[in-house]
Image (tube, rainbow, N blue to C red; front, side, top):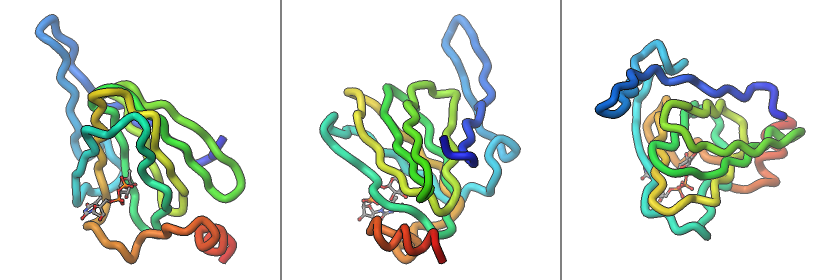
Length: 133
Ligand code: T46
């Protein structure tokens, strides 16, 4: 299991009318600069397959479920996200692959930085070199 793995509890208000979850600045350990989401993902699709040099992110299964495989260069962990009130923190230097999306699932991502292709390591051998440097 990865040692710096963290699941964040997102505060919520449960109500017979439905639940309301809220993300305020103290819930996420970084200032959110960008929000994006994956949706209409075919169940056979694999997303990710890269690491980030500086970016922190929190993934939330807003609807449905999917699996996140994480590698830090030494150990690996598979996490199933299937609860809208749980966020998976992914710190820099972690290889991630996301798959097994259930039909209608939505992956919300809160990110610490603007989109920057130069922050991506999209080659696994380069990732291993990055981890050793
Ligand atoms: C990650 C996982 C969970 C943008 O133009 N702006 C954006 O903010 C993002 C995230 C992507 N893009 C472009 C870059 C590519 O041309 O959208 C295209 C698809 O991106 P990518 O192949 O990186 O998508 P995923 O789902 O494999 O990865 C994304 C994030 O890029 C990544 O940081 O951790 O979701």
